[in-house]
Structures are given as C-alpha cells and as structure tokens.
Image 1 (cartoon, helix red, strand yellow):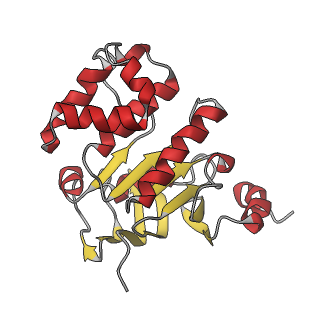
Image 2 (tube, rainbow, N blue to C red; image 1 turned 90 degrees about the vertical axis):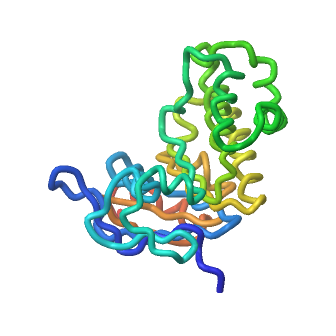
Length: 236
C-alpha cells in the first residue's frame, strides 16, 4: 500500500513546558482532504505547525511519504513539497497582487506561468492585478495567499482557518478550489473551527479536544450529531 503523504504518529509537543499535543495521530493521503476540527485551544494549529516543520516535537514521529523526517525545519519541509498557509492569509499588503505573485518566481516558474495559474483559478485576481494586496477584500486576500502557495507545486497543502472572517459564499468558492486541488493529487489538511465550512467537501475528519484526537473517521451525519459533545466535552 502506498503510504500517506503526511503522517503524524504519537506526536507530543508544547510551549515552555505546557503540553499542547498529547499523542496525536493523523494521516493524509494523496488526493484526500482531511478536516482537522475542534474548539479554540484544542491544538489544531500546533498540529499543522509541527507537520510543516515550524514547531518542534517533543516526541513521536513525522513522516512524509513514509520517510521519517522528524526534526525537519520549515525550509526543508517546503523543499519536500509541504506548503503551509497560516491563519491571517500571509500576503504582502503594500505590494500589488501581481507583485505578490511575482515573488513566487523563486520556484522556477516564470511570471507568466504564475499569473496564469492564479488568474485561471480566481479570475477576480486578474481584475485586481494592479491593486495593492492590503486593499483587497478578505476573500480576495485568501485567494491570493492560496495561489501563491500553489505556485510551489505542493504535494501536501496545510490550510489554517481558511474561512475566518469570510462570507459563506466566498468560503464555498474557496473550498471548491481546495477540492479541485485535492483531485489533482495533493494531500490537503484543513484546520477549521467551524465544521460546517468544510465537512461537505472533506473526505475524512479528525476532531481534536485538549491536545488529543477524539474522533478520526468519515465526515458523515454521525459526526455532525456528535460534534457538540466533542467540542463541549460532554455526553449530554
């Protein structure tokens, strides 16, 4: 069997002696969208940072395509094909849309190739090409951040709170693109606090509570019914 493109095994991590992850197991295969859900403070963002080499592990293993890369740093993780788009969109607000895209030429693609990729996925960016990124709407900034990340041709895409502060119709459109990215063979791990934003297009779901995965399975109706209990830590 082909191994997952991303796998965390019994990962533990923390901050200044405070435990944030307590034995996390997660895997994402090529062409799969895994929704990582849970309340604030559950450890979702830390899990993504660990997966992307941004935060160190205290114990456990990280594997890319079956290869143990525990201890990898963010630069080597990026070289291995892992792209992390953090919460907050991560665009350069004082540069134009086009200049933001041109900064991705370090990947070896030409300016034209990068623009074609961005504008074909999100035509609105073509209309905003000369506009400074900081004046775009929140949804347009998220589109720009996503296309910048895709310029690296990632094998694994890590998305943190893609829907934050955005209108439902914008979120739906963004996740349509995420689903298409997965269909192209990318392994996608999406962190979301609001399950309704992502469950309709996810292939698999994991729910974290207090640093542990309390649910790992299909994103079906049974999970939707159980979410309130999982988030609140109550069986009633």
